[in-house]
Image (cartoon, rainbow, N blue to C red; front, side):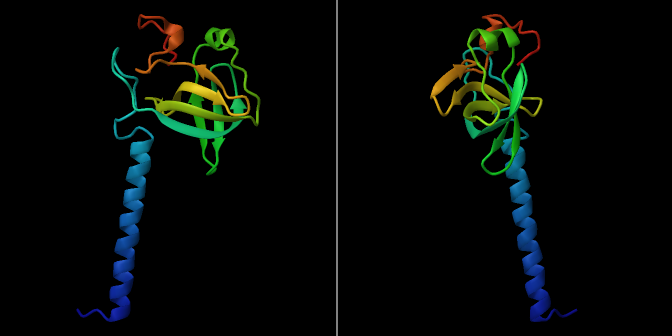
Length: 146
């Protein structure tokens, strides 16, 4: 079978687009924790790879909120224990711009290490450098709320 130049060009284009789609899907999978990097918080003394997300608060409840990022993604942000959140005065408003430093957790959410309210610059801490929740104390009994 002999290919003419049009058929060859189309075949190359299909292979090229397929490679881009595969690489793109792999990048999203690794960024969102599928590659095993950033999925769980580290053991005591270890640090986790911290990523930064920015956007506006689009949904808010007592243990989590969602942000709408500049590129249109909706990302769930895990902040944990209600009492702890109240004790540090964390109360962002819907539509408020925030910066979240954290890591992808095993549930597919983004566990906040710190949340910064961009208008005021106020920083709220939620986890230490190893990803351990600050409300859980030094032990591991955190009630399953990471």
